[in-house]
Image 1 (tube, protein in one colour):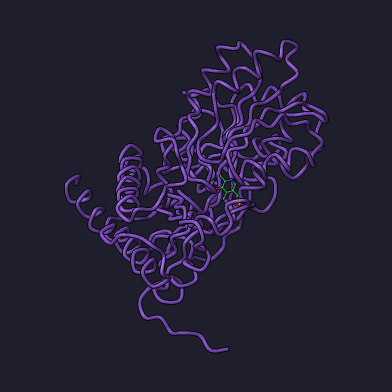
Image 2: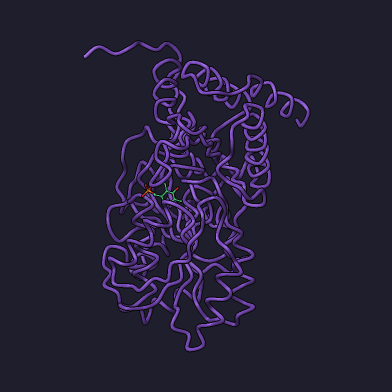
Length: 391
Ligand SMILES: *Cc1c(COP(=O)(O)O)cnc(C)c1O
């Protein structure tokens, strides 16, 4: 099979997996060590302590050798019992997958619908909780950043709605595409389980996932009756006390995680979030200059880690992505579920700077022209103007 040769590097601008920085690649590129030996204990202890700063929690963070989907399962099976009612918000494709998992595990979700153009509705969550006088709802599950739509839910407002309803439900939040990109506060927002993955804002290859766990969630885990074994927090937390794991961890990915966390702390989390906000705003200015529509229709919910862009009626997002991959060696995110072929997604998260963003937007603008998608030129210029004027 012949393939076009592309000089220069591939632009991986899907909203995860993201580009892995050289420092992280070099940290991973070392011999695997004995995961029961003293050197590993030092690595594990350092990583588990530093990770807490990334989740903005004083409580434990556990690490699984699994993709983010595994950490979803861990969050549900450690805290809930068969038949429990959970309140979920259908903000997009990932919220839908989490809901399907809950059904398969024997939970009974209430699924609050949205139009996939905004985040979760705190008022609707508050109403459902207020109506639940018998406290049948055991958990509220929200996807912080819905990667299929580019809409970020306001977890602080969801927390306030739960508190206003005086409801004891746990709050479980998926931050797989927001952690270390968009401000997120496990403790301050009273989140009980935070679910995260390695391959997006954390700038690592896929293969690790995380749960940050509140004291209330730990207490719930004592009485939870869903079957759990591999995902059980208890042996994990016991081994983690000395920096170890109950089964073989992803040793080399943990070297990388330790380095990635150091990089994020060196930059400073506030600077990391501001960098993502700025790149997201520059991207939206480019999209508007092209005359295209942003999938997220609620400016308060704009995502800082990705932008989903709608194609004009009668034009194919997948054909556009294929042209951009073929001509410019750049991968963009596809539309998921009902958004298939309707939107493309620009990932602007992780290890990413101004010039990479301009290269990305340049590839999109040339691709729009090459694919014959009606648009105006000048998106890259609009982004440059914003970046240069807001250093
Ligand atoms: C990527 C993603 C997932 C799925 O994670 P995997 O690592 O593919 O299992 C779930 N939720 C959100 C919000 C995501 O962005």
